[in-house]
Length: 311
Image 1 (cartoon, helix red, strand yellow):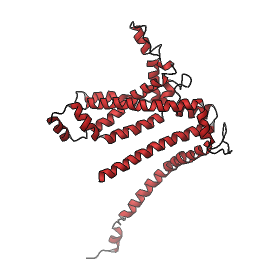
Image 2: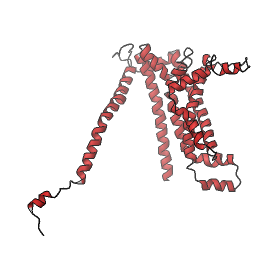
Image 3: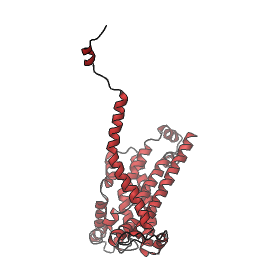
Image 4: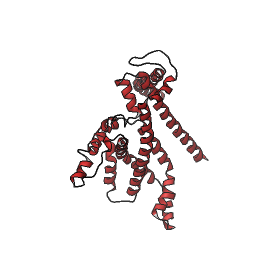
C-alpha cells in the first residue's frame, strides 16, 4: 500500500518526547531564576556585607577602616549586650522546656480518644494562627496591672493580690516566656500527636495485656519510640527563641529599661536608632553562628540516625 504525497504531508508529525521535557525544564528554570537570584542576593551578598561590616569601625555610615575581630571582643564590654545575651540564655531554655512539657501533655491528653478531639485541637492550635504582634498586644493587656489579671482579681475582693511582672525588671522576661509558650505549645502538641498516631498499636496492646499502667506505657514504650519528633521540636523551638523579636516589641518593647532586651532587639536598635553599624553587624554574626551551630548539630543527628537505621 502506498500513500500520496499530499497524504504524507497531511499526516501530523509527532515531536519527540525529549523536546517536551526539555521545554518543560527550561520553562521551570526560567520561572525560578528571578526568585533564585533575589534569594542569592538577599542571603549571601547581604550576609557577606554584614560579616565585612562587623570587621570595621562603621558607625552611622559604612566604613572601610578594617579592625579585624576586635569588635567581637569589644561587644562583651557593653552592658546592654550582656543583658541581651543573658536574657536569650535565660529565656530560651525555660521557654523550650515549658513549651515542650505542656505540648506533650496536651498531645497525650488528646491521644486518649476523647470526645470532641477536633475541637480541642483547634483550640490548642488557635494561638499559632495569631500574629506575633497581636499575641504580644493581647498579653500586654492581660498582664497590665491596671487592666489585666491583677485588676480583675483585686476587683473580686483580693486586694492584696499583686501580679506586676511586666513592670518589674527582674520578672519582665518571664512575661515573654508566658506569651511565647501560649502561642507555641499548640505547635508542639500537633507534632507530638502526629508522632503518637504513628506508633504501632500492637506494641501498645501487648503492653496493656501484660498489665502495664498507662503512664508506664507512655514513659517506656510510646514516647521513646518518637524520640526523633522531640529532637525536631527542640531545634525548631531553639530557632524560634533565637529569632524572637515581634512579640517582645509588642509586649514590652524591650523594657522596662532594657530588662527584656534580646539580640534581635539589640541589633535593630543599634542599626536603625543609634547608627552603630559595626556593633549591630557583630551581634548579627553571633546570632548567625549560633543558628549555624544548631543546624550543624541537627544535621549531624540526622546522619547518625540514618546510619543506625541502615545497620
